[in-house]
Each structure stands twice: as structure tokens, then as C-alpha cells.
Image (tube, rainbow, N blue to C red; front, side, top):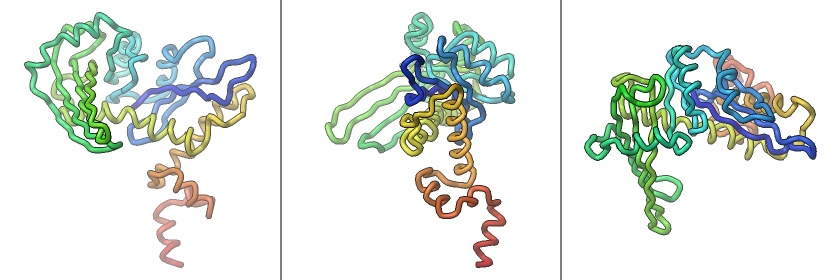
Length: 262
């Protein structure tokens, strides 16, 4: 389950900042919860209330570095869930400890090579089990090294990312951990990007009270219905639905029978 926030830019008024919401989405693309963020705060205090009404037993929660907080880790442990948290400079001591682990002496648990977006990319994942990570309930430290080369310019870049997880050694192999790390960004690609580019959310001028949050929830619902209907391209799904609006509500078995009967 991925946690991430988004600002509804079109909801800004002269006397009020833009509405911000935070959502929880499965890595398969279903939004389970959404909550409006207090305008006088940030997304950190909204983390626990967002997940409070969801069954979390056995779930693995991914989030960006903003939510790498001790209170969040303790909350997930109480709910019998696991965290997979990115560690950056917002935790300088922990980041430095993880960075100084003997990664060169550790064999990679997973290596993946891809060619996409006009670049070649190699990702290497290493894990180190430890009982002395200065983060609540953390059982393993992880390092992801991303090597990229732009096929147009030939320029290479290297990025190193440190993470911690409460998953014990052996609970997930290297390929599963890599898939969960990469799967977090689906909330950007399959939800936020679709709401912005396909549904033009930031261009919406609905600003009255809680209506921006309500409309964001309705967009989540629409995207989720289309994904449950088997669509991966929401733009194509909207065109398909525009021809016959009850289509998303049809049970697939009955829909296939209707097609055969024609």
C-alpha cells in the first residue's frame, strides 16, 4: 500500500491556500482511503488518521521520505503492518549510519536491467539484516543503486538510496522487495498523473468548502471503477464509456453474454 499526498492547485483562493489531500492506494491501483490535510499543518499528522479505518494486518506500507517518522513506524507496528521507509537527510544520523554500512562486501539480492524513457537503467538491491538500526522495529537495511545512461546524450548518472524495513529476513526475497519499492511510484503514475492530465484536476475551479476534497474522491472512484473493469488506459476507458455510460457498472459475465446474444 502506497501513501502519498497531492495539492489541488485549482482550489486556491485569494484568502485560502490550495486544498491538499493524502491518499492510500494499493500497488494494484485501488484507492482505499483519502483524507484532507489541515491547511495549517503538513501531511505528517494525517498519516495515522488516514489508515485508521483500514485493515492493515500483514500489509507493507510504502511512503516517501517525509513519512519516515518514528511515530509512524510505531503506529504500523501496533496495527501489525510493516513499513518500507526511505531514509534521506531528514534523518541525518540514521542516513549516515546506513550509508556507511559495508555495502561493497554485500552481494546484490536483486539486479534488474530495463530500457525505457530513452535511457538504459540498471538497478541493484542489497539488504543487510541488523538488530541495531536506530529506527523503531526496523529489521533490515536496504540500499538501492540506480545506474542510468541517457541514450541520446550518453550521459551516465548514479543514484544511491537507503531504506529500512520492519520485514524480517526471509519474509520477502530481493525481487519482491524491489517490486515493492518500485510499486510505490504507481500512486504517482496511476493516480495523481491521471487525475492531472486526463481528468484535469488542477484546472478545476471548484473551491467551496470541502468540495475540492469531495471531487478528488469522486475522481478516485471513477479511476478505480475503470481499473476494476480491466482498463489500464483511463483515457481510452473514458472514450469507451462515453459511447454507453452503463458499461462500467456491468458485471463482466453478463456483459459477455450480451455481446454474444447480439
